[in-house]
Image (cartoon, rainbow, N blue to C red; front, side, top):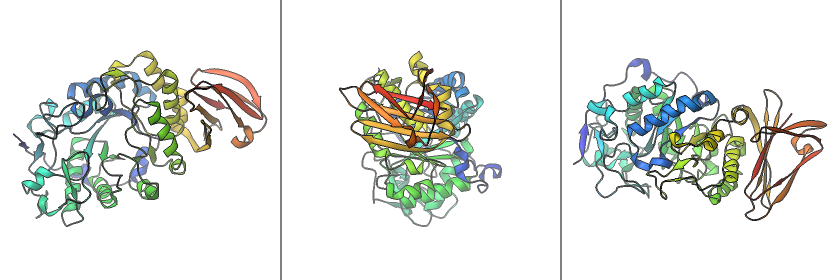
Length: 441
């Protein structure tokens, strides 16, 4: 039986005043964190979120990792792994048509507390807390004609059946009608009172829901809490790049990236259009499907990532030199030493935080070269990838293309070793699906 929850009290004036700063200042560097989707799908439970937060605080926080994000359908009591329960879902919705956490999965949400106790736990670890939602308004709220908080309007007066999500039927579209902005404002008022720092909003980008994105932006700015906005999934139209960059902190370039080589090479292809839009907001490569994934996930059985070690290096190299947000998808407490090493290379994470002028030098004949500069110390970074499936390749880059002259010290950042000093050009021989990430001083 579907249940109703009492709403929390309205958030106080201390956190619900008008925004005082530009939202782009909230992500001066690309966000880094953990998301529950790849390993738990729509079924993650509170104890699992806490276990990942504990691991991050102990092992990853010193390296800049900070967000803990609860992904999709945390408001459904009886969801399932390997897809979604769309047959008889039991939703938890308050009297204003706003989703609340399912208490059988998140016990600390009892008595209408919502995610505040879990957010407080995450914050106590020195980390930040995030949630996923779908755009729109719950169908249940429309069917019950629930009031929009603080207005004379009801949910059935602000919905539309246009452009409904094709893969999940929880919500209706929110139409551009009186009461619509107030509904979005009411849910962000609620999230601010819980202490939410990050929100991933799904089904925004294909097709591109410009009006709802604008309502969401206004709602976040009015709630008074710096809540980072992540738009999902891709492929976000490049024609809307300027709009995305002025309304969100990050936005997806592609659909879900899973642990196959084809997903990574497709991402590299699509990313070619997005280099000019890196920073101060960020095109998003999606979650990092490494470590132990699909414990109760959407695709496949419980496993360690299917990517080879070379492919894992290639994925992490591309994500970091591209300056994508880094949202790890595996179960952190299940990490082995190799997986942990991919997340804690200080030189590479410094490149990720500090570099600029990211650009592709070439992407042809199964060879990819990407470079960037570190304005703090003048270092040049160069990532070279062999995308071929079955042959080694020599890949060369002329120093003129890097705006370099003379002799230079070169360091292999993954292997942490110095190469011979070089002048004029650099050439490497790479195995199929392998890469090298170089710092040139």
